[in-house]
Length: 404
Image: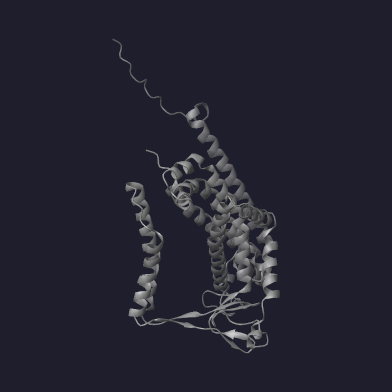
């Protein structure tokens, strides 16, 4: 009987980097990487040499200088005497604010429109098709300008609420829609308000935990727990109970007309509203198509099998179709979120001061540091895009089909 043994392992030689197929691909990739790095090194050294010849150098000392300009909306304390660095941070926060609001709103609009596009009702189906075709085939900049123009032309000035215009009245005596923006009551945080906020956050976590438990119980045992009223009770009751037990620590400051404008409360600028809704409605049209494609990717037999078990259409959509469709919807949804973040740089068209308007606009023009400002802008958008992609990929992996 003959015994077979593995041949002796051949010792590594440099020639194997080219001749051996096990190493050849890595060799070519390493050579390509070195060429790319050499190209960037040459461009960088050429840039530095040209700047030195012109008597310039790359420096970020300008970030510590006084900005000497005002910003119409700030989420943190800021004055015209603040530094350019603080002005840039204000712009970054404004960008993140409008991107977050637009992503959430676009997702809601897109899911509703995508499901409605498959409705058996002819009128609803055609209306949603018209919305999708109208909004996604017109540049988002035009929609931003249209919405902003309508707001400034149709809504009354703050002075009209003095009684000059009989149609101008505050909603519930607390909310005013004007051509300068929306005025809302502002919270006043008293002793114990932090506890209320923490309970509110815990209630939100509790809602997700309960719904996840109910879904797992349904899949494991077939027992169906109610979703609607328990979720609403968990969301509202604990916060209200703590709020009244602590003696109402959070009160409201209402906007009041003083002179030609409102004082007090919170103002949401018209430019923010126009940018927010234009990005949301525009991107929502693309998300609607992704949702429709994801739903249609689910086999029709899944719907028929669920219906044969006696599930109502709403239950079929929520428990059978959408969970499977998410595997198709999420990857292009990441691109839509990235587009919202990058398209927010169009804010300067309506005077909303995002990071492009502060760091890439006024700061750049005042200091003349174009290269430094543009590099910082590129770094910010790169980091925020990578962060969004990373978070959405984590969710995408969680929704991926688990194989045994």
